[in-house]
Amino acid sequence: MWGGRFGKGPAPEAEDFTRSIHIDARLWEQDIAGSLAHIRMLAARGVVSPQEANQIVQGLLDLKRAIETGKVMIDPSVEDIHTFIETKLREKVGPVAGKLHTARSRNDQVVTDLRLWTRDALQDVQLSLHMLQQTLIDLAEEHLQTLMPGLTHQQHAQPVTLAHHLMAYFWMLERDHERLSQSHHRMNLSPLGAGALAGTSIPIDPIITASELQFNDVIPNSMDAVSDRDFVAETLFVYALMMTHLSRLAQELILWSAPEYGFVELDDSYTTGSSLMPQKKNPDVMELIRGRSARAIGNLTAMLTTLKGLTLTYHRDLQDDKTILFETHDFMLPALNLTNSVLSSAVWNTERMRQAVIGDYSTATELANYLVTKGVPFREAHKLTGQIVLSCVQQGKPLEALTVEELSAYHKTIGEDVLQALQPEHAVASSLSQTGTAPLVVQAQIELARETLKNHRRLGG
Ligand code: ARG
Image 1 (cartoon, rainbow, N blue to C red):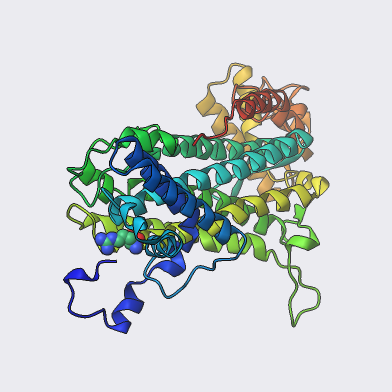
Image 2 (image 1 turned 135 degrees about the horizontal axis):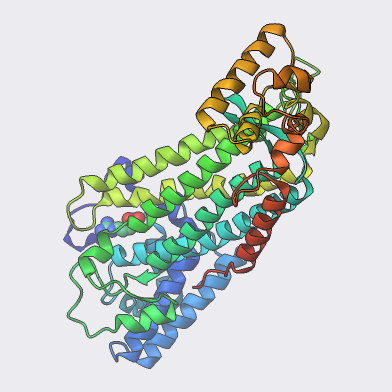
């Protein structure tokens, strides 16, 4: 393909080291699509004759079918997928195949292929994400009244509901959904026509190829077009953040399914046993999601590190963008789908969750708020409540066990109605501020979330 200037071929070990077909073989469809658009554009501009273009188009379509049906197998000894497709095309249509690469370089070709691939990948990821968001909403709706401890510093802070907790993840994932759309929009531009780096003297029309491939526009600068991998870095960032969100949820499910918590039982089909301890039921799927988030972050770091020292324009370093992008994508999709399945099949022990907020002093804030409603300044209310808690802790009894008489000794404004302030159900139901944990408010949040889901649009291209 580039042998003219060379006295001899590459050393086998150099060839092995530089080969990428084992990674980029999965771009074969995009490569053919890009070539089809390119040859049609060359014909439209009169650079090749209609007959020549026809032969090449037919050859490419035949090749596509042959690969699809397994009649042609991708040869792992070739340098890369672009070389493979062109070689096969030449076998089919003869020397006219040599016209396909007019006004094109593998530099604009590979990045076109990868943009096309990533565009589709983002669609798949977004769909799985959407489905997981749907599950979170459905689950939240079922658990509007399910009490559980709300934590800060891993300590019981205030009671919340499982619905509220799950909806927090919904909104994290909604931002991820938005980021996927924005990344898709930013990357949906065509590099074709950039050539190796400088454009071409051949009278091409990059708008034609761009619109044939359903890109929104052409990248305005050919040097940027061949050296830019922002779209890979950005995708890896969105993936890394999404994996981070899934990892936090995984960590919670791992804890919640431990006997000390006992909040949830994960379904047998998403857990594994131990080869030694017969009683074990391990949350391996969740652990691997947590574990792979590390690789997602590592792969993002690898991409940024690759880019940071590269002068313009193309360098072979860029070839390895695909290794890390494909690797991350290949666990991103199952991580989303499995989180969805694990959540949908989990059984929640709502009584156990409720028990966890009984006697844990987490209604102390409500007691202080009660005093505030009686006109006591919050700082004073806070101090008084702290004293009440301390005395309870010393006597080893829960707040709920206090009588009105005991409580009113602390402040003359305390009356009968104080008792309900000590009930976690009451604390939750009265957290009615717009974003709070009261079922009434979370219900409205769920409706907003449903509306948001309805407005999700499938990505184009
Ligand atoms: N396999 C290469 C890659 O993935 C294709 C581009 C090769 N270009 C070059 N000038 N050697 O980046």
